[in-house]
Length: 469
Image (cartoon, rainbow, N blue to C red):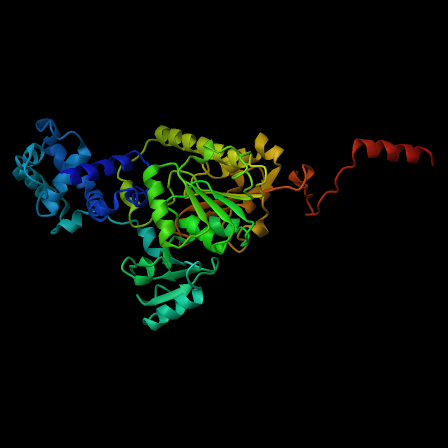
């Protein structure tokens, strides 16, 4: 029965929006992860139907030992859809079995009402936008090259062409050098190269932050990944650094930290020091971490941009506007705190902030507030210009949500269903050489840059010289 309790707890965490399905499942004990993940995902597919069945039969009212809806969901799922509850006899199992006939009766009524012949017809349909997103596979440059990977796939019968042409088609990405695109139906979990850490399943947009940060690949580089688990972006940074220099990877959650460690070991990240601590507790003046010149920030967010085959299953209930706004404001306050803390590191020259959210509250508004903060003015920090942040990517920030069109054009957005990626947002802050460099040069209506106004002292001197002539 412990297996069902674990699955119910996982559903509780998803209800509390503590992460994506993939992220939450990654924190489960490895020995039970595959089995628990299968039950959680299948239960979510039928959640609406199973909830109706449980409510109509008054199961929770009649059986007080079944203490939560999620526990009832996983048990009723296996009873009706998986051939029975896989647990020894006990009061909870017996409580479900007492209602077996009624539960099955209500289930059959729903099938008749909806006009479906098979159980599969009751499953929640996938997000239709997901079918237009290729299967992205990042080649782990710490282990082999893109050329070697391409040769390997061609030797297995794959052809370089549009990944949607066939199940054996793949292509190179136009923006990320180490990224390959495959047919979305192609699975890699049993691929030897994937198991060996030579290939990493990572959405294209998720590759943008590390690529934009692009720390130097030398022995003196010191980089921080502030929220590292599960480790995809960390391993990408390590590969870009060619396993040289030092990369500190912070993760405060103990279970997610264990997942991070496994990922770093699997992907041969030799220059990474994983640290089980909250980045916000790190003193910027610490000699060890204060030397960092590059910081990657990908903090907790709403995950509203994710449209893959799993997380659409979480959208089973409508969230009212007040609740959603309150949750987004809480997240954005935390996100802003992370950026401001990163700006306090004395040697940092570049900070990349990203989210997998589509909401301006977590994206443009956070960046706008960060630019207007005391930390940004003290730095001083500004946004890196358009030509330094994926210049060939067309979709940029929402102009109306930022202080200037220039700021909006400096950040990157990905739109789910339109850009063949999940929804994403990326911004890059850079430290200016001088305080005056933090101020944007004004541009007149003809597109010409205004001349900087002379200082008051120079104006007086010029006036005196003119009077003497």
